[in-house]
Length: 275
Image (tube, rainbow, N blue to C red; front, side, top):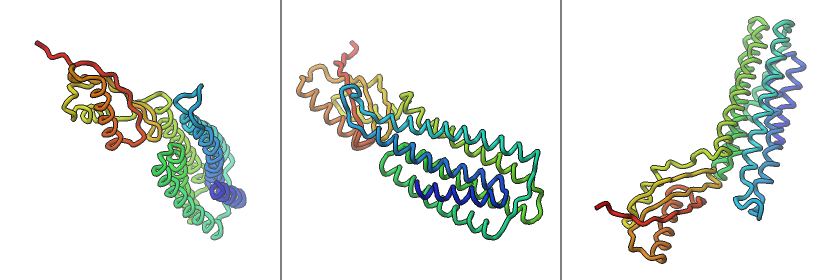
């Protein structure tokens, strides 16, 4: 969070000094990385609360709501940058490019690369949707910074200043695209989109000889909070104890092959052979 805020401050300051709309826009985009971290911290805090009477499935979806809030912030920022770019088209300014400003931009670019890679790695290790989403946001910042760097170099080589607001529009496009990706990833969890391939689950279940069929397989949640329920048909002569042992064996195999934190609910039915 502190690294993102420092990077944003440098970009906005340098962009304002050299009158570069694209660098300033990139700085405000970096600022959303820092503010997104704050939202993420709040979301993770509430998501980590334990199960209680009113929330028997826990509070894990708070993390997804935080991701949607970050996406909303990005949409607002993208709109602001588009308006500023249009104004710059009508009143173009020549950016005052200096070697120091290019060095600052290169430095922040390297920092963003490190932050994005580190955050994405930790997100995968911890099965944290908010970390993965935020790392995607920071990754888009890398491409934007590269575009800004190329723009400043092109202006330094004599291209017209109109290229600066053009790149600002590209920056806005990246921001809006990142927002759409975050909505897609988090919205799927909130809408209980299928989280596991039903055929994969079915193949595991049918690998047990006493199971004759499996159907109505449903899944939802995220890697850190995964739920599956299904109907299975077993040999009709199994008693309650044997069914209980069979279900535990199936559950352990699903956990070992798909996700160790998965929670499975079975509805057992007797298998009737067709005469």
